[in-house]
Length: 214
Image (cartoon, rainbow, N blue to C red):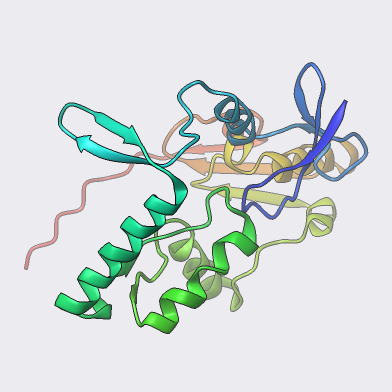
């Protein structure tokens, strides 16, 4: 059996054990099954379709590419960046990145170059920006509940979130709190999710069509 650290940006920071299956190390906060994304990462790593070498397009419509060296690939990128900067200016380079499965260090290190260059950035609202704003407006701060506080809760409410799928380890703690301490779980959603099926209170709502007259 070999142990690997999950490379994704999820702060569950799972330590994965790989033998006949991929699972979290027993005894840890995240022990048990891992998320579907980590399983897919393992499949992608050994996939025949994985891109292992730099390639350049010969005919995009026909899907034709040819392999080039890493030095050649870097030369192409540098040449393209210089062309855009000379013709349009540095602010016409848009850095559209996000965390994904790169980890914190490999995500943040390249940003030093783009900021020094003066490139344009997005407001990073692709994923969790709206959630962060919503939590901040509700609680005054934008961080969620610590795992230990879930055990102490008397009532856990999941509103519009399928935690059994999207918050796998947090929901596991909630189920343990329900079993050990009698914590009640309530779910409010527009569909009968996996989370709702495991809840004590189920509120299934029907969204109405809202018409705004300007």
